[in-house]
Length: 122
Image (cartoon, rainbow, N blue to C red):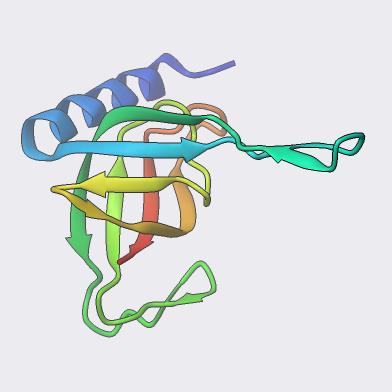
C-alpha cells in the first residue's frame, strides 16, 4: 500500500518540474514482431508522451552513475512520475535528442516513485 505522504510528494515534484523545468517528449518504439511463416518483421509502433523534466550537469568529480562512466556531455534528467521510462526511450528536450544510459528512481515508499533520475547522453 502506498503511503499518502509519498503520493503528495510525487504531486509536488510534478508541479515543481512543470513550473521550473520544461517539456520533454519520450519517444518509445515497441519491439518489432517477427512472423516466422513469412520470414518478415513488422516494425513496432512509435508512441510519444510529453512530460516535464529538468536537465542538470553532473557535479565535478562525478565519474560513474549506477556503474556507467559519465562522459563529458552527459546530463542528469529528473523526470516527473508517471509511466516508467525504458532504456530504449529517446527523450527530446529543447529540440535535442538524448539516449538513456541508466534509470534510477527516487522512491522512498517502494512502490510510488517521486521522481525518475535519468543519466542521459547526446
